[in-house]
Image (cartoon, rainbow, N blue to C red; front, side, top):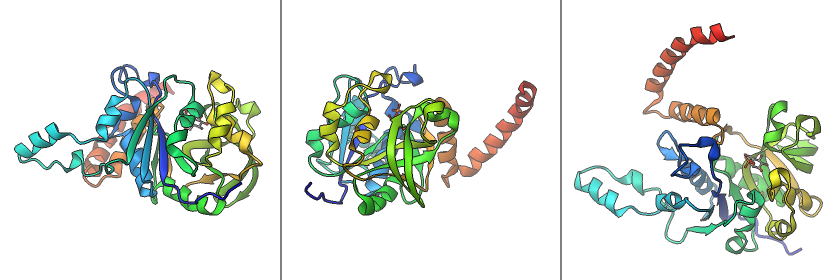
Length: 301
Ligand code: G1P
């Protein structure tokens, strides 16, 4: 096998999901545009990728997702109106990736995460690339994907971000079968998509951050439908074990599962508490709110 460049320059963002768990909020807007404080989820994922040195941002979209493309574009009208009123307009575009750095392709049918990633094959080509699932919002410094890129330079192959999940939750995640642990790095000998607790090989769950070897595309082409009737990225990774190295990395970051309503609400609170301009006010209001709800919680238990 020809040796690959170790630099990860491209990132794939699968954003074709329907977001039914957040209806009616997601009836007319993509779930990736739901805001945590004042930025959409997808904005955080792109920021994280940039902090990791990513130069090309590839979105796998679907019907009803045009708001994402608009978000990563200039907005002349808004800028013009704000400037006309003497308002600072940096928040609408100072952070935009440069011309040609963003591209979109459509996954015409929602056939699963593995299929979404496979749709990026021509845009990625023959080099390692990252995949970020915007539902998993990461709070950490250095950025979670940056920690992965640094580890990837040593291990290569396929690398996934992992964390221990409660035993009852294994059926929500890809779960690693651990061969060897070396500090934060785990060498895996297997991976299973959403096993029931009794069948789970461990409680080490995959968080939605991946650095993948481009051979995954050829493998995904042949993967059959798996868990949930979908073409699973997990099954593609499993087929590559023994051909390229496969590791999990426990990143120094807090993960918020924003595909889940409770996780999404808590993410909003956590990110507000991280902000110098909001912390005190939010903290005080939360304290008061907790006081109001404490008696009813006691009564319920
Ligand atoms: C996907 C993956 C799963 C991974 C999870 C992380 O599942 O299939 O292996 O653990 O993301 O969030 P989904 O949450 O899309 O069902």
